[in-house]
Length: 106
Image (cartoon, rainbow, N blue to C red):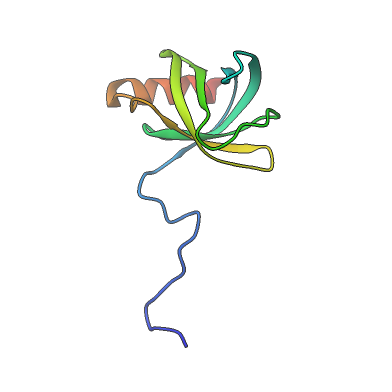
């Protein structure tokens, strides 16, 4: 039985807007090895990326970001070569826009 006006939650029902990008960079995982990282969307709180490394939920990464340099993040989920990361410190509003501009320019 459905409830009028109710809708199912989906991956698109997010509290924070994400900017679509296609930015190739590097990340360093808990084993201290550098891996290729393709960021596909980003927000001031985190990002989604594609990578071949077998990261697991809870792993801590250091991700190279334009303008900011190396930024810490925690893997929140990993599925089929994709990972969702939450930054250890949110990106400041004044840095976020310029960073996304650089990510889209490449």
